[in-house]
Image (cartoon, rainbow, N blue to C red; front, side, top):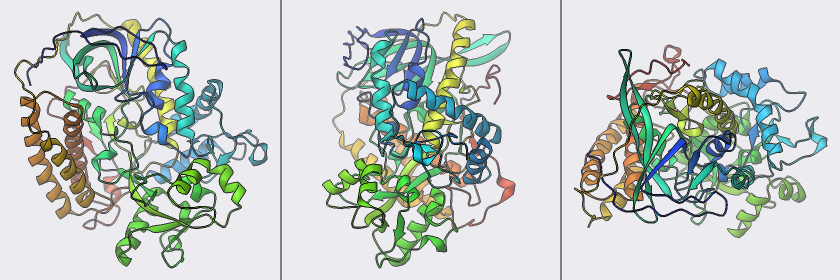
Length: 567
């Protein structure tokens, strides 16, 4: 598509939690961080004071998956636990597709990052009675020890809000709320006969004014989270539309393991709940899954029962719902003392009360919902992508940690560790980077008009999410995937035509990204002709160890990066 020219100034985005900057239609930074969850914030707050950075948030700074993370962060913090045990549990949950060296590296970095959070003011739940760490450690699915540090049942909210309070003390970090990235700005360069592609920034749409700003940067970091809004039912907030994955793919980055979408087994089944999550920790503290007649069923599927990894529990629930023709199953923790439930799960308890359920005295109706994207942009151990100057951290990245299934509470751990690893590499990059003298072209919208058919976007959004749920959900088949592929191809053509003719909007950009991500999920699922981890197909129901390698998709625009530093 041709460049689009923006005319006039971009007004400043003001926030009481960040640093106000007067912006024009062109901005320049050393580091542009797109995404303000645990990964993006973790990097921004650790940057040296002489690095000029920007933190971009699609909505308010705190809105994202981190805010809604209830359970906690897994780390080896107790003397009865060990790095080897955490590694072994993660490898087991990952069903043979984890990179063991990456797993060990991340696990070993865990305790130091918990200390960094504690030093930053994050108030974790503490009690000396449960171990020698001083933290209250809970146990979740797939873990053989209590190793999940948490802040009651609102860990993500406490973490996010605590780190946000640190932003005003970092004047080198400018904040742009209500800005969505349109696309990355890249160019190819020839260095001593070796051509490589480099990222020089991104175009950002101001969602409030409708203007587009050109933001150039020496390093760009994608911390945009996952893509579970591609499904009709999800635990994720509305911002989880796979923006980083789609933009990186269009810019020439490989993606990996996109077939592995984790469905959280227990979201509250209520029309007003909007897929409110019932934390894994409820099962970790003794919660039992029940059929409508009150009988337990998980022992029939796995010896670990309710503490089996999420893929096993979600498939078991899905099986029982289809077998019996029921709308939900039930999660019961009412056998625990009232005071303990209120102490460990105050947020969940109150939200359920608001919706008419008292978890102290009755079971909660629950269903699975799309929750976590285990694949993403392929990165090395320094968070570098295939495009020079472009990094990816957090849920948007594929690092090799999760394999075919993410173990509970390893997600925030990955966000923190890779923000630290990216920081070290970015500081080195800024110190040695060649000045390319590249000046991005301004955005050009001289050949587009305002849309008079916004209904096209809303209808396509609904169609996409519904057929992804029906055909590319918890249980798949060749026929279902073929149907989904035909429909996504039709949608892509329609959306591409729409994008090329009308002025962009937030909804159009998100739909465009979701269609790209949906296609990547479908392609990856079609290539994996076995059942493993989160990918289950009735046509290939068994695991095939000849396929024990990541599914890697390569875009037509891929250019090998000779300086990516290896995995």
